Length: 59
Image (cartoon, rainbow, N blue to C red; front, top):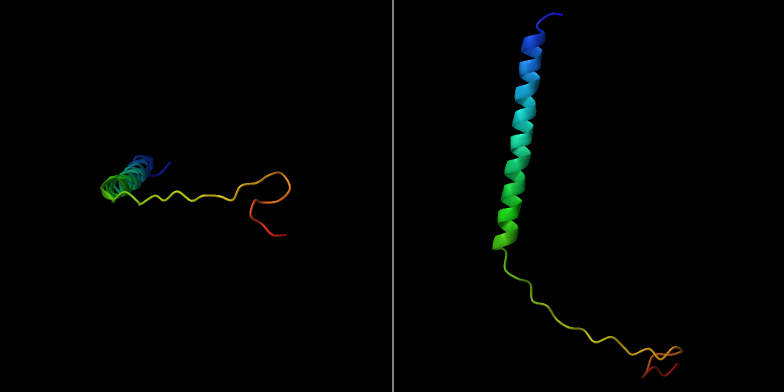
């Protein structure tokens, strides 16, 4: 088999580069997430349901 060691090392290095690229991207996204401001939450009241019609519904 011609150059199996060279092929293996080339593939190994490329795989290592790909994994490191993914790790860097994940760490950058985690940093963006933890440094982002907290969103403003609002409580929304839902209409009451009595089993047949919504209370306050004229239909």
